[in-house]
Image (cartoon, rainbow, N blue to C red; front, side, top):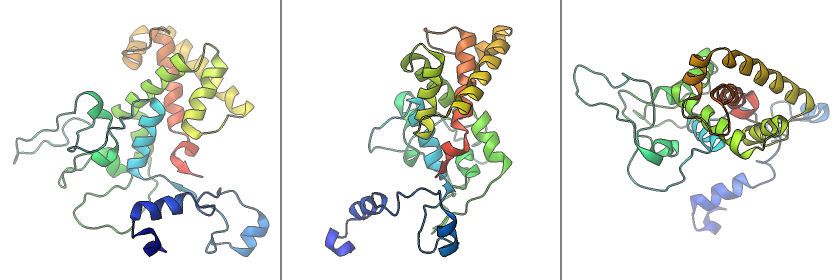
Amino acid sequence: NPQSMGWSMKSLVRLIVTSSTYRQSSATTPALLEKDPYNRLLARGPRFRMEAEMIRDMALAASGLLSRKLGGPSVFPLQPEGVWKSPYSSERWTVSKGEDRFRRSLYTFVRRSAPHPAMMSFDATSREYCTVRRVRTNTPLQALTTLNDEAAMEAARGLARRMIEEGGDDLNARLIYGFRACVARTPEGKEIERLTALYRRQLDNFAANAVEAGKIARDHSTKASAAESAAWTMVANVLLNLDETLTKE
């Protein structure tokens, strides 16, 4: 009863998200599917892709870049050049400095005529009118954004740095560390094997191409070479793009 909570929305949301019903897994059984095929009785947890702001915040949190500062004016995180170019205005999107660049998406400045493109790709709204419930689409542009957008690569470099500096000196330990940072569980043996093969393939590629390694690694960890950092960055990019990373299970 909201009234018993003093009409506190924060208390109501906390009650919902800590309830056993909300915290259910989307995994189900044939018996439950027969009794509740459309999940109207909430026999299982819903399985859906996270919202635009959550996807960005998740990537920043996993990469160790997320600023947890509260309050204050809107900020201008990284976005592609030219989004704000207009013959009718001299205003320009100037990327925020320091930790403001990595603040939660809640604080991102919104211009209705030129909203943040990465968030719009994931069904955020332009704020031109009230949206009671956002639609969820599934398009190739979303994958292209999380794989290639400069902000996504920045997060991948951050996660790579964490795996190198905090994950330990062992290849398996680093892979497990990065995997857990993204999906909150320990990877299975087959998953480790595929990630190991990916890392070694990328390392061979960048070891033979120092220029490309430098472009990918940029300001890399001192505990690894440019080729190693670039390879870890590509592994991190894959981890941040896993279906399980972007989807509420």
